[in-house]
Figure 1 (tube, rainbow, N blue to C red):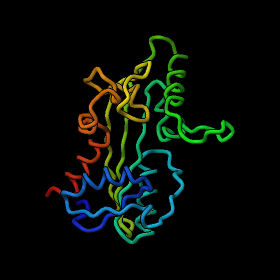
Figure 2 (figure 1 turned 180 degrees about the horizontal axis):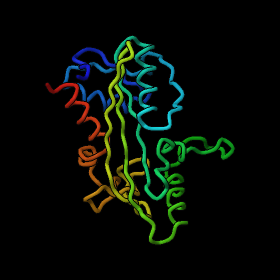
Figure 3 (figure 1 turned 180 degrees about the vertical axis):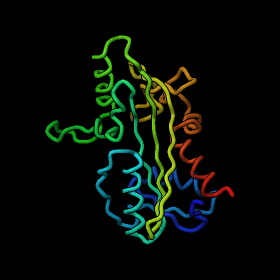
Figure 4 (figure 1 turned 90 degrees about the vertical axis):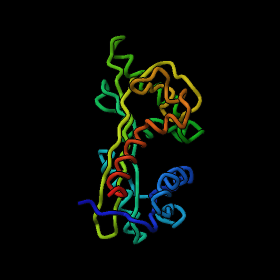
Length: 209
């Protein structure tokens, strides 16, 4: 039987205010008071895992051990079948600009172009199936943990379409739709996303008796 969170405080292992707000809104109906690792001054651990689950657990365990509270972390990304699952855990890294370019940060159009370039090298009949993945990890200070995996399958298109999303959304068409994630209304996207799938599993396991 999985250990239950119950009510009380939960550390969200992020320094991103937007992510904290999104997760806190999802968990508020279940009596959880969410605090960010950033607001508690907790350091960000190195994400050395080879899978989404490993990286989510690294972040959740670090936050739980440092705060003495239960902690929740997520790790997510895009896997492309024809690229052997890449970019995978390196999804964000593919968007990183180099310091010598004079404008460090993330360039998602560069990342999308990198994926498309690799697919194009394989010819016009290349398999364009892909999926967004999200893993949520809950960890307690005593070492106990639970992991929930979500997935949204789809296909990649080119050129990019839409302005509503972020990351690789403009080139990702979710299964059963003809619009990209960046063309779909955000509320609809959130309802069918990989993160929604993972959260549904977490809620069912943690809060439904």
